Image (cartoon, rainbow, N blue to C red; front, side, top):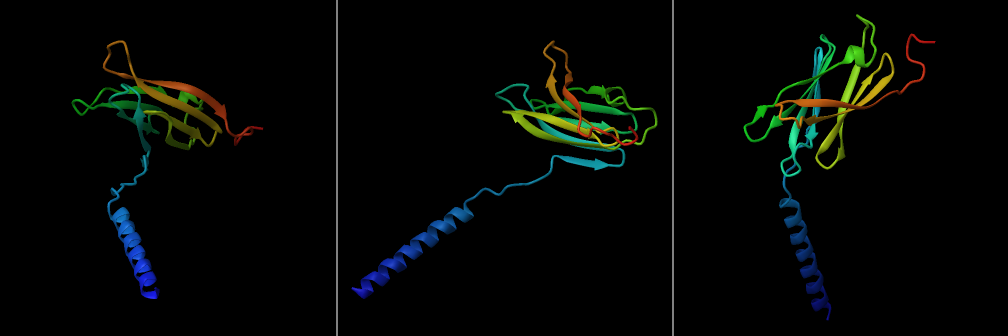
Length: 161
């Protein structure tokens, strides 16, 4: 009886070990990477754009500090080319005085199936904007940038009393 119980536990242990090994080694490797980067006077972010529900596509956001512009584009999956650039004047959008030392932070987040939003904060003025990008539907090979909200995240920004 004792030998039989040992063989049962040994078999159960080997079976569970084999199942665990198969589960561990059969997982697909995942590439984990960030969706934004910065260099000098530029910040780059990526996120999905809902241009066609059956063919999700990637959008690229580029913030250009020198020009004070937010640029956005979509990649055409069929030919692997950039569709065109949409442009937003951040100086006017955030009501920034000329030559002010500004500091932008930006990242994307998923707001619905296949659609990302860009979250853009300017730390000097304390303003925070939410934007999305889409493909124009008027047969123009271009994209548009849509502002959803622009609010203060700090009620008393630097330099204001």
